[in-house]
Image 1: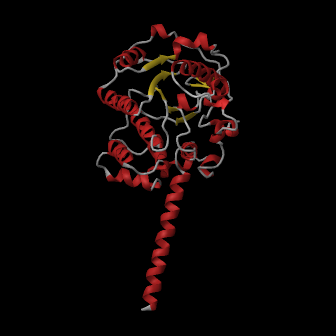
Image 2: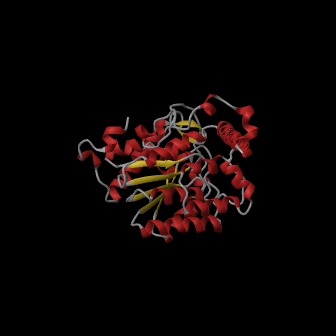
Amino acid sequence: MLRNFKRILSCLIIIIIVAFCINHIGTVCSPVYSGDAFNSIDTFHSLPENSVELIAYGSSHLWKGLDVTEMYKKYGIAAYNYGCNWQHLNTTLLFIKDSLKTQSPKVALVETFNVNGILENTDLNGEIYYTRAIENSKAKSEYLKQCFGDDYTRYLSYYVPFVAFHSNWNNLIQWNFMNPTDGFDFLKTMGSFSSDGVMKIELPDYKTFEQWSISAKPRAVLNEIVKICKENDIELVLYTAPFGREYTLSDALKEYAKENDCVYLNLFEYTDEMKIDPSKDFVDVGHLNSSGAKKVAAFLGKYISSKYDVTDMREIPDNFWEKNIK
């Protein structure tokens, strides 16, 4: 009897160890820099409740291209950059729903690079993977259902990432062996993840851009974002960050904003006003660097502080932003 018990216990211990190792190996092999998303999401969840008046959502064009600390320094806006790499529109919707569990922002700033794309009926990727840092909820279940459909092997990949990422072993770098909460301090930047690198690029003429329409399914997700903002008395501002290629949805977004009583700002139109320098303000063709990120934040901060009733937190001594931003 005792011998059988020991055997069963030994088997259970071995199963637990094997499961732990498989899961850890999956984390090690996960897409490069997805751990920074875990860090940013965890930092957002550590903020005091109802302390943020502006939350920004979107892809790396926002995450790397909007230094929200500049909004505080120039206009006293309590903002957090809740963007992450890739972020298609339904991922943005999940981030919005997640953020409203603990915050009651006055303004939602949504970057639109991937506004015409949603993740649907697809395998696990880095973007879906980092949503593991968001706690389980009805919204998350609906999101994963949309991403994975009824293919339960995809859910297995999500919860046991080694299944999806085992082939990444030959692309490992030092980052892969860091704990997801190591490294970058997102509390000092309030979520922003800009780079000091510089690449000289050429900015295209926005007046010549080919224009597309917004597809039906992304439009439905955008409609849900508008509805959530209206139900929660949140001012919605959509914007497109400048980069070194054409952007094909600016006309459609202007029309959409007009029809839905929100704002759309195509920042390609304001590069001169922002003093964006294509020889100094980009880290690569697609992304602003820390210099450009400050200029975009200053422009948007000025617009938002002049249009909406946001508090100048600089008038409140020893406030959370004053104590934490670098």
